[in-house]
Image (cartoon, rainbow, N blue to C red; front, side):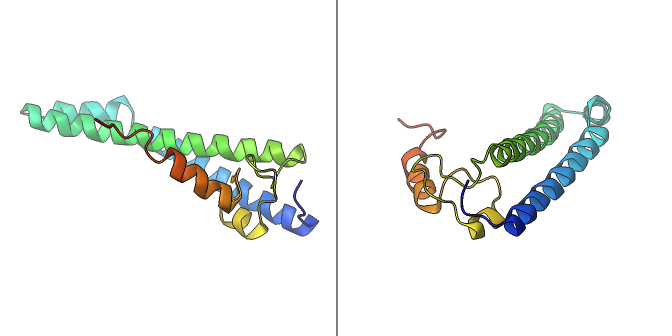
Length: 131
């Protein structure tokens, strides 16, 4: 594990747990407020294909938001496992230390700033169609 003090480790655990709880609440609220009935309410009032498209888009946006939140919860759980296994704060690429300041802002970070910068430059084109 990176050279984190007990106080820093406890602080990072608290940050991750608070974020995890907030995400779980948001997911519960989103699922309770959306769902099939919400779509039926929107789609039931449509009078043309354009309105139906808007209803579909709103339902898709709700689903995308929940997917993003679930992915973040998984990242937090993975970071907690790394913490328990004494691998937390170690860069996955170079094996160097991920600084406390970075972890405090982004507690699920798996790379140091230098490696993350290289990773982003290397894989920036993925997901973007090219001719």
